[in-house]
Length: 85
Image (tube, rainbow, N blue to C red):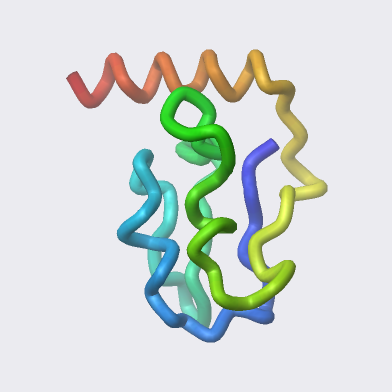
């Protein structure tokens, strides 16, 4: 399951620099998460760092339209790491 930034986003810029996969970028009005790059920090941290640093409660949620298992997230992490290297 990739994450989704809701319209509660205040564009504080706390999440974008913390994403280890560079999945967060500025969208038209608010920050957005690229579902193809988001692994919910699986492979990097115990919990998603964007959620941890976000000052707005429930601003970054699990994307209900893009569900993935922990195993699928880890497989995506491995693919991303191989591309980066």
